[in-house]
Length: 499
Ligand code: ADP
Image (cartoon, rainbow, N blue to C red; front, top):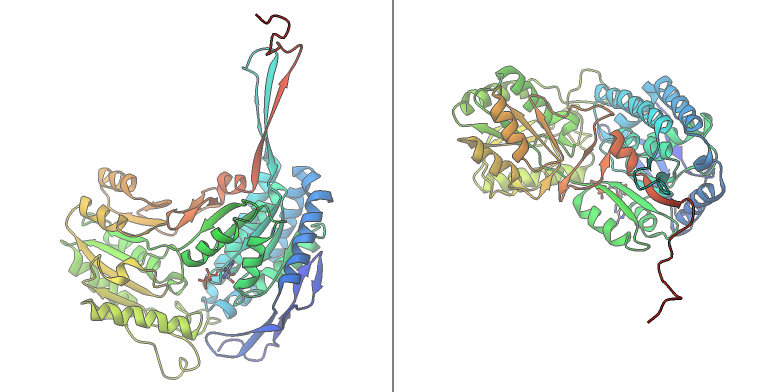
């Protein structure tokens, strides 16, 4: 199980294309399923951050990357995508071992990351601004799209490679230079991507990686040499990033917490809805900001739906990340397992009814890791803490509703607004509900789907800014308006004709 005989990986920061030794010791990463030491990451300090942002600043202000053609940048990104594809198994294994996600899901994350990198390459080729010639024959306006400058990319542990790929290739396609700060729990795939990018021909200093805990991210967000921060993580940490980024009034793009609802109407295609609710609830161990953590089900079908949902959940295989048979892996660390358990205990104290799961798994194969079974809590109301707060584990809460108005009120009754899913075969219901939901994404008769072309992001306390798609590319650019008069300009002040 897990990583057994593989040697411990050791990663340094990457600054100006070279390994840069640690600033303040190192951080050990133990696999969340076996407890074995799998990696040691350098831990940066203020000096490391300063060196990395200086490298990125110099590469932006003086280097070739922002000045070369989009076609040349696209060629580097395509080569990077090809090497990620070549190293698919290796990259997936790093993410699975460190994050606890099942290997099948980690492989799918690599495939999606390759597709995102290819999409960003296509955008680099086709990026352009606007020209305005209907302002009169002697007045022309050019609106150019320029790279925003040095972008700090701060990523969390639940999708180490995928969330990097939602930011990095788009920033590079735009002509930005970057400093990445991956999570201290799951940094390996990010350093590997930096290596692959340099092999692919990325000039030195364009992509720098600093490793370490939150203080490193904080120093990046504060740095005067950084023009933009793109952050994915918790809403609480996002608040700190907003504060830190006040230095220099940096642009921000924030993808924060979520509390998505799966809304199932009684005219839904039953099997599809069951499969979708299950997938949305426990995919990536439920450690997913768009997880369908709240099932809202119409009361006319609720009992039958729940019976079959529970039967399916009990068939899921919980186990080692590296086993292809595993559906649900271990949670990220012991403290998080305790947090999930305390949410479940709190819900039971508030009147929720457990239908399956509800306590950590123990016994052979489980004792060395942080395993939590798929869990369903029925009779949850909107006043319960588990309805309102992000649990980030394989736990689905159930709340029954009578009609579409009540479903929308319940779905919108949280401080988050990242994604929601609607299951119905009635087109009027589907569209009315989709339009009334306050979230950056709405899925109809599907869930946690996506494509590189489709932007993703949140409203309310789930953040602002978009990733992926044309909008995700444009986040890393700034508009410049160039106004041109041809011929003589009519004087504004008639200086010779004063009364
Ligand atoms: P999670 O543990 O859910 O990933 P965080 O939102 O704390 O939660 O972490 C997301 C990323 O933000 C990680 O890379 C983390 O190290 C980093 N981080 C933590 N604290 C800060 C901070 N104050 N400023 C900037 N980045 C931070």
